[in-house]
View 1 (tube, helix red, strand yellow):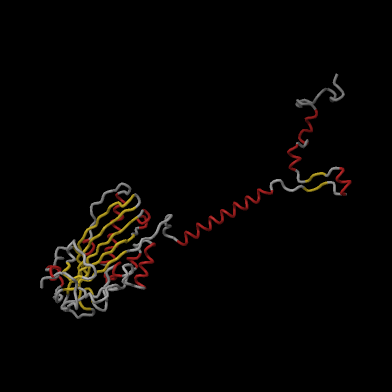
View 2 (spheres, rainbow, N blue to C red; view 1 turned 180 degrees about the vertical axis):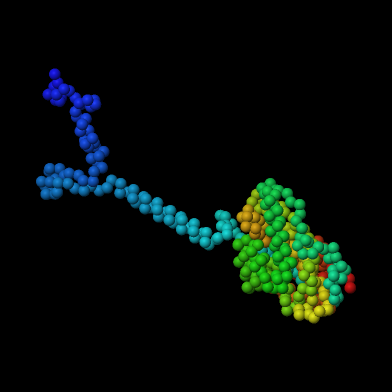
Length: 356
């Protein structure tokens, strides 16, 4: 017979723990009670303070919202900083501690020892000068056989050589650049770190070894001379080497020969040759290679026939056919030779002139 606590016939079927389990779902455990937002005052508290039967408890996790807010603020600051840096340096971001290296340049005028030879036929002048075997235009700047280095691939070495060649062609063989007009085509090949120095050289040229336009490119005074033949003769070499694990260097040594006549000359005017030898040292990191840009770190230029008495910082003012220099340098300098560089001004060797 069932006890008085049990229902007649025993516990209901399917209720293993007895009848008390029917109320298990509505029994509040300690965790539930602690999490409640409302808490009942004790009887003593209600008698003493005449307070309401319940009071509202402060939220247990108030600190969590502050942490979330702080995290959102930090993310917003980081995102804003990234956008600012991207706008400030859109093409490249310098590495930690990176310092842009300024171009060091030397422009040396070469004065003729006598009258500048000339004829009306530029081809005849070329054929009777040391430039007789030079190639025409970009063909005179061939790429050497290239090999990968310890830290740079064949493709990266070729990219460095091609960029250096592009700079030489644009800065010394483009008629628009030579006549003193176009400069952007040269500027875009320089890394952003050097473009400010380039711009200042043209807005405020100075003979300080840093800001001479003729250290960046070949530019004639258009009021003095013009091209008589756009087929410029060129010869020289390009060499690539690895400076360190993150830097490639390219050394360029080229001699360019221009046929010039007086500005605004009538047909049949006499033509003379003008010679420019440039030794350029380029430097490339991996970002330069990716952007097809270069850091030009050294530029040594010898040019003539020029008068040492005239300023060659901003533009080259050639001595043309029949012209003479008021003063020359200490000794004859041959821009076709590979040895010897005069300090400030030199004399153009007779062997460097056409045999008229």
